[in-house]
Length: 392
Ligand SMILES: [Zn+2]
Image (cartoon, rainbow, N blue to C red; front, side, top):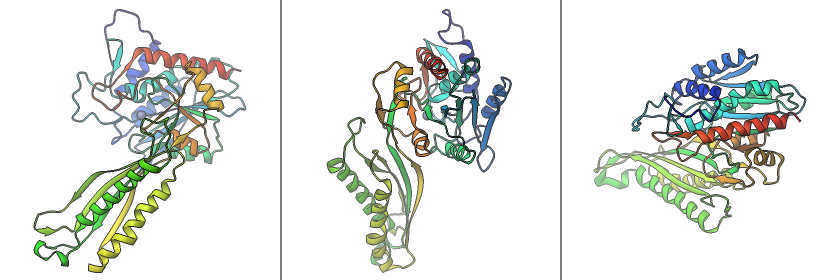
């Protein structure tokens, strides 16, 4: 970690980044090491945190509040889990934050432990301020696998009558305020047909062929969305998209296949009803495909399982929280992004949300993930301005 020039960020922020990155919080494992460390770190500074656990008690969210005041607070929200490094060619140890060329390398450096570190590092600043509006830290588990954990956290807040007035989700946006993202639904669909010798196809129910018709149906909806449905040019891809990403089925060329499994998803614009899309697809399966299958064998079936359900985020351009994010980031413009975040879930829970955090999504999830030190410094300045604004 030799570096000639002094760090352009607070020593405390850098120490926190190093500590947080060193916890391997890949979503498949536990995040408790990190969460309990942060809980103890806050407790040592006189801040008590609430933890909400998953069913296995191997994972937890953390929620903490600084400052009294009677106004609804502002949440600084980050997920603690990271995506796997398996099979990725890293030049440094992904779980040891390493400074090179004015960048911090490490898994989670951009997505999104540096934001969490910068927020925590401001704890003494928030405590010293005469906050009229409290600040909350919300750290979640299992964001990368479908924004799972934060649902527990939001339910806990609702049960306990804690109603923050706004949320800043520090996903990497290069510190540009993002006011909208698409919603996501993902499904696994299984076709259970009937095996037969391939010379006797009428006696079988070919699961692959029926599944293929559903794939074509999904694609047809995608084409219709692109051609005729509403557009929002604020998004890179300005329409709702659908696609099938996985298909598995069959065992041999001379057997009518009994099983076929599909994974498809859609990414929908604000204003599109995802339930209507779901009904359209399931309706085709139930009313067109299934009767044909059952005419051959009543024991055949089609099953759907929802694998992900993340509401979109859709904040108004003219809004108090939007204005606050613009002022804090010194950015007059706002944008919309394709990827889903916890922001949509905060908004659905009645807490307006904005995405604004350091680093670029371009570096997230890749080998040699990094964040520019300059980005961390911009985030520190953002949080300092937040503290100052909440004193008033
Ligand atoms: Zn993220």
